[in-house]
Length: 98
Ligand SMILES: [Zn+2]
Image 1 (cartoon, rainbow, N blue to C red):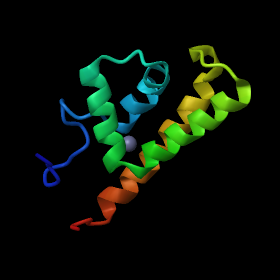
Image 2 (tube, rainbow, N blue to C red; image 1 turned 90 degrees about the horizontal axis):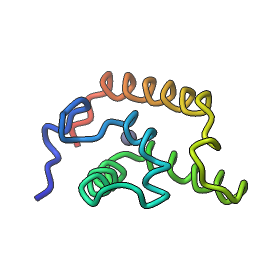
Image 3 (cartoon, rainbow, N blue to C red; image 1 turned 60 degrees about the horizontal axis):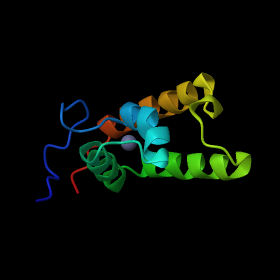
Image 4 (cartoon, protein in one colour; image 1 turned 180 degrees about the vertical axis):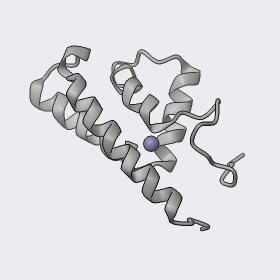
């Protein structure tokens, strides 16, 4: 069942972008539980920003050839989170009733 209406950031069951940012390394390492992975992918399916973030992560990893949490600097995450905040603020101003 696809739940498009009532899709809201902050719901307990749904991952928010910030959580996706935090989980992305675990996801790429295959360290998420099946339930977490499902939620992660469900979020990606509806969130172009996180899809982009994941793509950037993959690119970064393929460049560095490594996949360790140490590769993701806190600053890098903070920057993305900041970008997401702006996106979210932007989204809430626009009434996306598609
Ligand atoms: Zn997202």
